[in-house]
Image 1 (cartoon, rainbow, N blue to C red):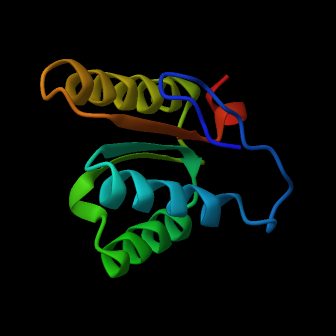
Image 2 (image 1 turned 30 degrees about the vertical axis):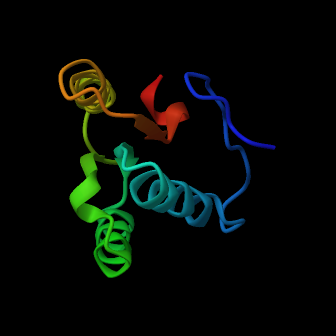
Length: 113
């Protein structure tokens, strides 16, 4: 099923089922097929996960079309809140000022609340 422009979706699943792989595929398609930009907020991410994501985006050639914001797991709730809000501000800038299609990811929304 295609995702509707301007809509919202949720990807839910246990650890190791491929959510990050799907996210990376969507980021690649937005960058390469739609000349859009993606914003990824890693709320409460492990350092290793962030480094792996950056490496994979570099290899696939989409890093230049992606803005990344990370807050580590051991940081206080206020920091995690700011990570998601910073990503939202970036997405709004790309949409409103640069007039680009934007794909916004917040991973993991449960660590945000």
